[in-house]
Amino acid sequence: MDERDAMRAADSDRQAVADRLRVALDEGRLDLHEYDDRLQRAYAARTYAELDALVGDLPAPPGAALPKPRGADVPVPAETGRGLTARWLAEIWEPWLKVVGIVVVVWAVTSLAARDALYFWPGWVAGPWGAVVLVRTVTGLAGGEPARWAAERERRRRRKAEKRALKRERKAVGRDPDRGDVG
Image 1: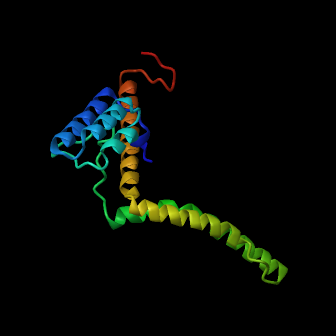
Image 2: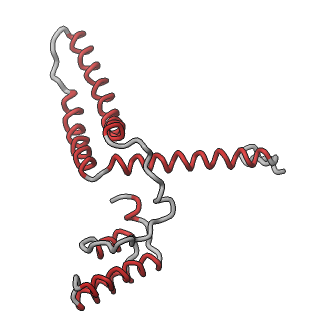
Image 3: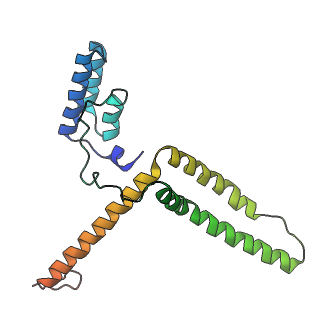
């Protein structure tokens, strides 16, 4: 479930779904009973996920889409494809690689100190965690996670830049809230 799915829907979002359902009824994609049932559920929906489920099996009318929450229209950075996927994979696997590297070194040092190859206990760290990371990688690649990850990073970068600009602006007029100055 992504961030948008958990967000609360507005009346305009529910109305947009109701309009799509009406169009589907007019096109013969829904019968009257199914239309009525979905319409009731649309007006009772609280989140975007509930609304998306009602129209997920219907084609979107040309030029129409569910309204997105504020900030969801941040464009994905120009970097796409392999470079973006490689950066996402590095972000996912880097903690695992670091920890496994450390525990293997600890095992190797203790084995050298004991002058015997000890039981390879780092497998208990690497195995289960590696399986979890592998599943996350496969499902993420199949679900387009690298693009969402890049969009979220871009949103954070822009928010940070806006905060810095606001802070510079306040400082320019003699008000820096971090220092307690009041102009």
